[in-house]
Length: 293
Ligand code: PEP
Ligand code: MN
Image (cartoon, rainbow, N blue to C red; front, side, top):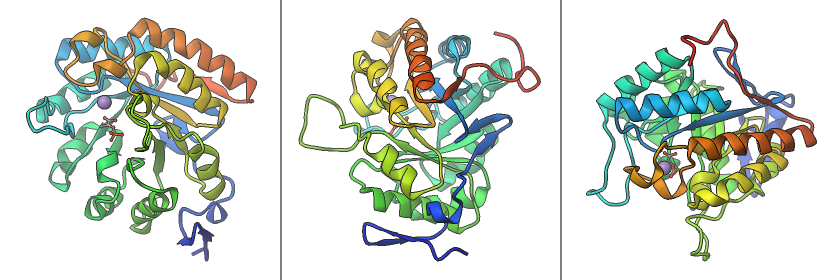
């Protein structure tokens, strides 16, 4: 085991860049996260129905996403808000995966949900509110599946990297980091998207770093520009909320792009990627894709 690095006064071991200078690539059946190509993960905030999920899944795939996102278990501030379809949502995600060939990322909020979520997902998402749920971190680590660990909304980068260390310390090397905005004194955006985090994390760790400008801004109109900015800053991927009818969305309609706006955004993202010497992975391999859209 590498002695690791010191970062902001904390000792990093397995996550430290020095432990794997070449960088980690998380390979989800041919979709490589952390390589030369920028990976696009997109879909609704929450799975709402079969028609809603399949229509948005087909649309984001046609535009260039290779990973479908969508919450079946939703962490909501109010207990009276829509909290997800739970098991039925997982069933629909599995259906969308089969129908489109897209890889699936979805949140697991609690260790009790883990077996069911693991059966339907390719990537387990640990949400911002659970970044320091150390029991959950160890269990998703033991599960052996790729983990998308979102930054806690009030977490420093050192705390964030130590949370990733928890997952790696139980033997799971497939961790993807995701900057999704932090709480600051600024009320005009939902969060303050901390793009400083991208180069700083990439300097300190070998893990892939993606950016979620949807939760990072809270405004759909800001998402394309901040997505481009994230790619310019060096992000390895983007996590984008898309809904075919944002005004009717059961959660996060305000920061959800229409499929048309999403497709336009990806053209801009591809141009920025090319300008910084990266490529965008906008199609699935024919051998790994399932049914055509
Ligand atoms: C999400 O991506 O579905 C989500 C709830 O985001 P966060 O955990 O970043 O708030
Ligand atoms: Mn959301």
